[in-house]
Length: 586
Ligand SMILES: *[C@@H]1O[C@H](CO)[C@@H](O)[C@H](O)[C@H]1NC(C)=O
Ligand SMILES: *[C@@H]1O[C@H](CO)[C@@H](O)[C@H](O)[C@H]1NC(C)=O
Ligand SMILES: *[C@@H]1O[C@H](CO)[C@@H](O)[C@H](O)[C@H]1NC(C)=O
Ligand SMILES: *[C@@H]1O[C@H](CO)[C@@H](O)[C@H](O)[C@H]1NC(C)=O
Ligand SMILES: *[C@@H]1O[C@H](CO)[C@@H](O)[C@H](O)[C@H]1NC(C)=O
Ligand SMILES: *[C@@H]1O[C@H](CO)[C@@H](O)[C@H](O)[C@H]1NC(C)=O
Ligand SMILES: *[C@@H]1O[C@H](CO)[C@@H](O)[C@H](O)[C@H]1NC(C)=O
Ligand SMILES: *[C@@H]1O[C@H](CO)[C@@H](O)[C@H](O)[C@H]1NC(C)=O
Ligand SMILES: *[C@@H]1O[C@H](CO)[C@@H](O)[C@H](O)[C@H]1NC(C)=O
Ligand SMILES: *[C@@H]1O[C@H](CO)[C@@H](O)[C@H](O)[C@H]1NC(C)=O
Image (tube, rainbow, N blue to C red; front, side):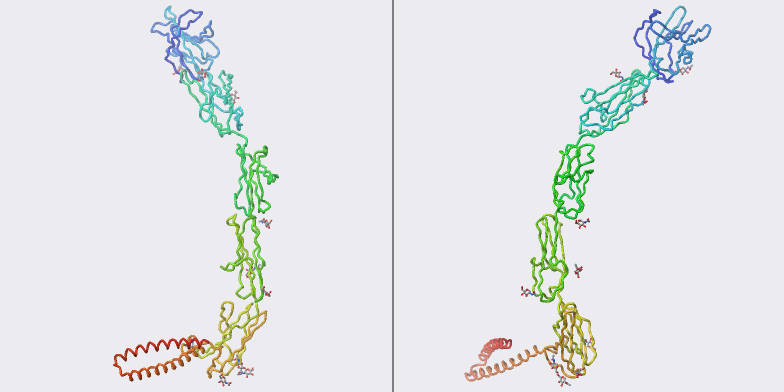
């Protein structure tokens, strides 16, 4: 079913040769392969029919009768024409059905009627259409080489009737057949069943900048007498290949390469596909042939040089890059912890070796020393950590640091041995220095000593004991370390006697009534000076009073004079005082 009857009458006069009959016009009926087509008989008139017959034009000379009907006998006669007998039926309106239409049916059929003695014959042309297979691109090129006219693929469209046309599209736009970079060769063949198989091959001259190109082919075919349809193939993507004209070498890190780090060289080419092998050279000598990566592990200053990567098949294409491996080696002299004796000398030095301009500092805590430095006559205070720091100006973040510990050792020394009366006890302090830390031993007769916690002062230690002697005793403090020993003694009076004042007796800071001997002495001096000055003033006042008395002046005047004299006395007093202080200091 679905055969369409075209109501178009072609004003074409066809002379039916041989018969000599004149046919008015020819109707064209279209049908798709496999359909059933109905041919209407245009020559039927509402008159008494004697005969209706459908004929097929075999050639210019012959018509073959296929089927006929004579109303008189009401009989349909089918002639045994191969290929038709089983496919034709005549309908009641005398139209002819042809089932399973094929291209062999694309012929002219005649409806022949006999009405009385009038013969009328009308022609019907069957036009057959066959929708082709979907277009398909076979043998697609894996890639296109730049600048070469090269086959992209072959578009195949099978079983079309009539012949279909193939066009090519480049990135969805039609390919211009007349362009110099395009060559299309089309070949049409007939299949066994008489359909057209169309094969179109496309050759294309690609350019490198085209990159990836998508090709499709489109088939345009007649679906009906005036209706064209097209179908598009699946796209085929092709990459344009081109040679590398430039390579580029990337170094990571690009700058500030430090010794001991890893450096990665990576090479790339501008060709497509990108080259997968490169030769890496250093100072012109081949170092490696590898993919685009070349690693320098744990670089040293020997790795400094001109590196290049070059394309394997064309060594002229290369990219050289200079790589400088910076190094900064710092040593300290002496280069390990040292122990020295008090009074010895030591020289410290920071030695930096580097590829660039180095800035070296020698320091201890926050103090910066000249480099090198000789520490003469070492003291315990020289003990500590000495640090060398080196920085290189060319590479930021590149620094080194070395530290050593200098230990100043010496035999113990008792710096102070003092006693103090405190709270009805006597506290003896023994302040020692020395390194390693001295062990302190007390030697006393009398009461058992009560040792107090050792106080760690800067560079020295303070040992204390508390005693309550019942007799006059001697206390010995002995400090011992690996380098020797020191010892000092102090005399303690029994608790019941007053402690005689000597240089080892410390004043109790909690007892404000007790004053140290020196201060006490000073005060006594002041008291004496005060008494003398007082006597002087009294004498002067007495003199002045006597003089006033002699002059017999008024009391008011005498008051002013009195004050003036007092001021003078003060001045004198001050001067005397100064003098006294000066003489007491001597
Ligand atoms: C002839 O074909 C038409 C459609 O083209 C269909 O409707 C009709 O039934 C067919 N007649 C017979 C006798 O098969
Ligand atoms: C088209 O026809 C050719 C030749 O008969 C055959 O080799 C090919 O497979 C067919 N292709 C399609 C898509 O039908
Ligand atoms: C195919 O191309 C020919 C020649 O250009 C043209 O005559 C014909 O009508 C075309 N067919 C279709 C289906 O477009
Ligand atoms: C790096 O090289 C130095 C000197 O060649 C070597 O002492 C060091 O162990 C190496 N480090 C590593 C991680 O390989
Ligand atoms: C130096 O002494 C310090 C502190 O005592 C210590 O941490 C360090 O390991 C010593 N260094 C050497 C090289 O002995
Ligand atoms: C330390 O140096 C001073 C001055 O150079 C020198 O007089 C002294 O002998 C040196 N002391 C030692 C222990 O070398
Ligand atoms: C003195 O002794 C009293 C009582 O024995 C005590 O409370 C006080 O804390 C002591 N003072 C000192 C400084 O030891
Ligand atoms: C201290 O002890 C010594 C000997 O152990 C002794 O000779 C001396 O008399 C003692 N002194 C006192 C005050 O006890
Ligand atoms: C302690 O007393 C003795 C004798 O009593 C005396 O020889 C010695 O010099 C005194 N020592 C001190 C440090 O005062
Ligand atoms: C103990 O010392 C005190 C003061 O130094 C002194 O007055 C006293 O006589 C001494 N006692 C003895 C037994 O030596």
